[in-house]
Structure formats: C-alpha cells, structure tokens
Image (cartoon, protein in one colour):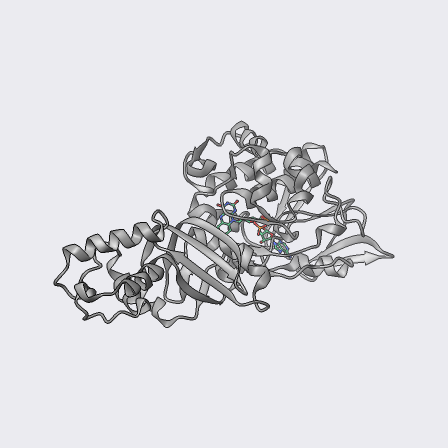
Length: 395
Ligand SMILES: Cc1cc2nc3c(=O)[nH]c(=O)nc-3n(C[C@H](O)[C@H](O)[C@H](O)COP(=O)(O)OP(=O)(O)OC[C@H]3O[C@@H](n4cnc5c(N)ncnc54)[C@H](O)[C@@H]3O)c2cc1C
C-alpha cells in the first residue's frame, strides 16, 4: 500500500492486486488490533532492533524514517500517540483507522485496487519480466512490478509466501525460513500445571548448546504447551536460527533483583517466620501460588520437611531453583502463531537504495518477503513502510 501510494504520487498509473476481499487483513490484527505503527526512538536506534540484515536497511530507514512515517499518517489525518517503549499507535487505538487512512490515500491518488486478485504466476521472457497472471487467467502487464506479498506467518491473513515462489522463479535465493516472534514448546511436562501464570519482572536467558544467545528482563507467560509473552517472543528471533541444529535451553530468573546471597537472606527470614511449619507451607510470600509445588520439586527438598531442619545446602538448591529455573525448548510454535517470518528473499540480490532486483530489471521486493525481521515494538512495520516507500519512489 505504501509502495503503491508513492508510485502514484510520482504520477504513475498503479494497479494494486490483492488476493483478499479487502486490504490490510494482517495490518488489522497488528498490535492486538491497535497497530503499533512504528517506534519513536532515534532513527539510529532502529538498527539494533533489526535481527536479520540491519545494514541493508540503511537507505530505507533514512530515506523514510520512523518520524517520516508518523508525519505521513498525521498529514493524512490519522492522529497518533506514543506509548511505553516509544511505541506509536493511532490515537483511536484502532488498526482499522490505519488501513482506512491508507485506503483513502490510494483512492485519492487514483490507484486501481483489484480485490480477489491472486497473482498465480509471473511471466518472464528472455530474462525480463513480462506480465503477472492473476487467478490463473487474467494477464497484467506494466513497466514495473513491486512484490509485497509478506511472509508465511498468520497465513489466514493472506500471507502465504507466494512472493518466495515468484522470487525463486526469477533466480533469487530464499534464505532459511522460520516462524519468529513466536512462543516455544517446552519439554518439561510440569509447564502444563503453570498454564495461565503470568510473570512480571523476570529475567530470561536462552542458550544454544549451553552458550547464551539472548537475555532479557520483562514479562512472560506459561501456556498449555510451553511459554509465551514479550520476553519469550523477542527471544525466539535469536533462537530461530539454531532450531534443529543446537540444543536450546531457557533459564528463568524469578528473582532478578536479588543476588544469590540476598535471596538466601530473604529465604532465611521467611524460614524464621515459618520455623515450625512444613517446607511446602513456607513459600507463599516468595512465589506465586502456582509455582510453589514446581519449585519445591526442583529444589529436591522434601515438601513435608520442617523448615527448621532444612540445611544450608538445601537452601542453596532452593535459591538455584528460583534464580535459574531451567526449561528445554523443544521447538518453536508454528507459522500460524508467529508474528513474523524469519528469512526470505536474500537481500544480497536486491538493491538497498531502491529494492530493485539485481537479477530482473523493474522488479522490486519489499516488506516481510525480504530476509528482514525485527523484534516487537513497531519495527517490522517500519521495515515495510520504509522499503515500500523506496520502491514506490524508484518508479
Ligand atoms: C498478530 C500480529 C501482530 C503484529 N503486530 C505488529 C505491530 O503491532 N507492529 C509491527 O511493526 N509489526 C507487527 N506485526 C508484523 C507486521 O504485521 C508485518 O511485518 C507486516 O504486516 C509486513 O507487511 P508486508 O506488507 O510486507 O506484508 P503483509 O502485511 O503480510 O501483506 C501482504 C499482502 O499481500 C497479499 N498477497 C499475498 N500473496 C498474494 C498474491 N499471490 N496475490 C495477491 N496478493 C497477495 C496478502 O493478502 C496481504 O494483503 C504483526 C504481525 C502479526 C501476525
């Protein structure tokens, strides 16, 4: 949509082919229906949030910055607001207003929108792009083609990876694809007992064959299959490349604000209060109720043991269970639950200033179809806006 708007602004006749019955089905579900449009951090700070190929985005992010995105929407009449973590949302909290704003601009510029128009093939002749085939029958020709088909995640919204097939046909390499910003399946059965438990202020570390690849402080959630929540989803971007290759582990520090010594002192204070009680009845002020029996099992201490009989070594095991609760990441959840797709059309064969294919002239790739992905916070849409803007302006 952004690419079509820019191309039309440059005076081109533009046809937008959308296979769904409406525009922006994925955009509609972004930010839990509120659409986190971008992030109002310093533009330079966008780059560290990009997990794959941040350097490729230099011209894109500076050509159409996060502040340009905000200006664009504000000028088009969409009021925005900035929330925690510099996340930018429409003031109305409605993603539908973002779609409406884009659609109105497309109409105003005379972009012809064809719905139920699934591009099924790309026609090439002597290494040149000739036409696209829609719904296996209709042929569309033009001077340029911008492919903005998205990735594979939430296929129900229309993003079914068609662009990868087209790119491959044009000789482009597709890097390894994986669901990302996605929950984890955990092997330990006891996570089921913890289903629904949400933990705030925990520190989570992910390891690949024992080597730490990610550490973050924040919120997480236990589910019937494993773990989810902000710190887990962000961690999945870093874990995805290792899936199937290395053993992935997740360590949760339930008490990140306390050192081992401080936690031991805290436990001792609790034990003093509960001196004649059984161990299993002594932890309610230290842990959420759902976690107590799991931590007791992990500590290896007899739950019926009297608190005053617990040894120093046992106490240390208890601290360890709380500060380093270890889980095995069995796998990532599927594309249908993944916020983004990691991997895509290799950026090595795409011009970073225009998004034009280096293989086929006048063909452009933008957005999530490219091998680009970022953590949550509005950065993935910024990638889509910026790359779409460049491609539209290259026309
Ligand atoms: C649940 C969820 C929440 C998210 N929240 C946020 C957020 O708040 N902030 C953020 O920055 N990012 C968010 N994202 C990520 C963001 O939505 C995507 O990165 C972004 O939408 C990618 O834009 P795109 O234009 O490249 O692809 P898409 O938005 O996937 O759009 C691709 C379009 O192409 C159409 N299409 C595909 N194939 C064909 C074909 N063959 N012919 C015709 N049309 C075709 C599809 O129907 C679709 O409309 C979220 C993603 C999900 C799934």
